[in-house]
Length: 310
Image (cartoon, rainbow, N blue to C red; front, side, top):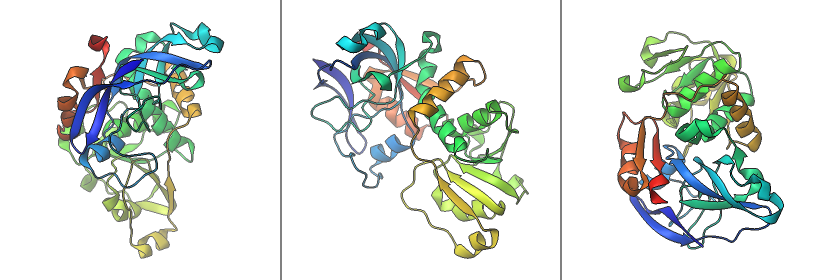
């Protein structure tokens, strides 16, 4: 069995080609993907060639950990799941390419527990569950953020999730005027307009690690910086952090528990994913879609539509 897949063949080299697909074990499911998202964090670093060495990464690579589809076949022990719509946080099921992520493909095979059931009416918005789970992981490890840096897709989800979990609305910084729109119940301003220097928790969703000193300068004594983006190298001046007894917390990748938590919040109506998918393009236009996702400032979230490839 083969599956058409997006292949990141090298920096700024996107291809579409079939790859051999692993056989279905008795506890595996086969999912036909309807939509997959393009990550402007890790995938952008891979696309640009700026990704630092990391176990399991390399070219060629099948990207994608933000996929939604329907289970069309299953192993003997999980056959009752056929027909379910699920969120797929990546899959390691291909021959001939690295598949650390592996979700951007026509069909994928993965262990049944990793395919998380969702309401089919969520549609293409389901690709946002990976970033929503990332946001949840960043928040769940400590106190809710009072300041969020960056109003891209992750920053918006962190802000919405902060409110959904019952915390006060956070302040959000955004340097790009085009991205200050779209707030739901919180304020978005340019950093230079904010005079506050006593934030207890600042969560970075921009990935701009070179600004770490400026964030530390806005902390209250004993305050915490949460790094929710993906970074190459980080550095900061020690005296300012010393004077504030600043704490630094790194939010790693989301867990299945984070995914289940945000799915429950979405299905209960507490967390809205509306208005966050800004662009949808057919998978045949994948090279152009990747370039737009990373270079077009108006693109908040790019989604690939796989349904025409069936």
